[in-house]
Amino acid sequence: LHDALVILRRRQMFAADLLELRYCDQVPIDRVAVQLNYAESTILRHQHKAVQLLAGTLRQMEAEARHTRRRLLEERIGVTSTLPLIGVEEQVAALAALVGRAEPPWLLSIDGIGGISKTALAAALLREVEDTPDFDGFAWVSAQPSILDAVGVIRARRQPALTQGALVTGLLEQLAPQEAEGRLGQPEEALKLLRTVLRRTPHLVVIDNLETVLDVEALLPVLRSLVNPSKVLLTSRHKLVGESD
Image (cartoon, rainbow, N blue to C red; front, side, top):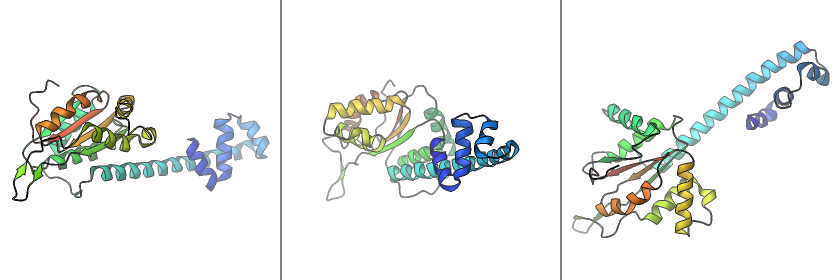
């Protein structure tokens, strides 16, 4: 409301001053009328118009905030196609119901063979829930896929494609860039800050393309320390049916 009054004052100074007197300073209507040299009935008409102007300013601010939120989301997803998926409404709705509840499961996985649009489904989920009040923010981090060698054979990496340090850095740069200044070079401090951010308010984090067992084994302990109330969605070719949570 304070920010809206500042914006309104640039356009309609009298309306902003009147609202500030009446509702911020809580000056009675008769005293405002005397102070501004108007009849009370005139002040009431101006007050009604000022409230409408303030409501319009708030609507504009809301629209701009939604546009900025959607733009940031699309930048983080990085999926070039924004065409709607056909025939997955049931799956998107089921995922949205799971992530929207402030209860377990905190970790979810979309798994399956390569090329069946696991990433596209995760992106569709984020677009589905980004207008809801369930999450304060969203983050998206991708692990590099397995190596395609010179003769066209896919070979699993000997090391995890996405390290703990890269994961923590990628998430902090998206969710708390100012707080993270000076801490990204200190792994323990950076991880501690990330835990604070994700436990302070609910966020939805997507870790895309965990293609090897090494990726999952290296990151699951870290991810378990980051959830509640935040949730983490994985996409992977590796099934996690053996994990208890």
